[in-house]
Image 1 (cartoon, rainbow, N blue to C red):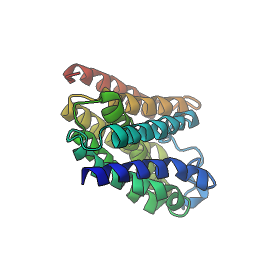
Image 2: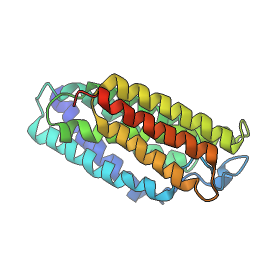
Image 3: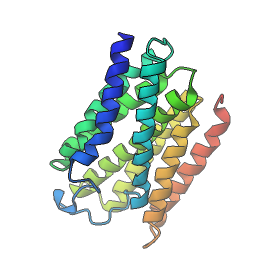
Length: 233
């Protein structure tokens, strides 16, 4: 079974990275997809922050291929593969779903996050930069992205105003990130990736300045940095 999961993970990682090439591209939900159009939502990071996907794609493929050819039967690699395969397979179709339904896409990205986090907690102690690190940045970005998607739904369907929706979504992201980083006691790449997203939120809310959203993001960054002392690495 180790060999089967190693092969499946390599295929899933490649399919996940190829998916954006096979779609018309995705630069965020269309504002008109929501009953209340989300033209410039405060919950969403600045556009440059999404460039991290390039790093995630390349690193996950490198990890999966290294695991396939060099660690196929290594028991230290085995536990993390299955949940990561599930997450990446869903991620391979996520772009198509996102272009049709923000609600369905939000549900799927939370399932992707669950798989990524389970994989992160299962990663072994060997080959840190090719086993742990890529899963950590993937899970970190999904932590932010899933909460951003939820915040867009809250505001887009009128359940909350844009700023309150952003605060609820960012607050949830911070609770998840802080709890995860504290429970892991390792994988600082996870927290650093969440910080990357929070900096993107700060940049997006600098003009016009949204003090509440920026303030919460800054507090979140400080809280995540403060957890670094609890890590074992």
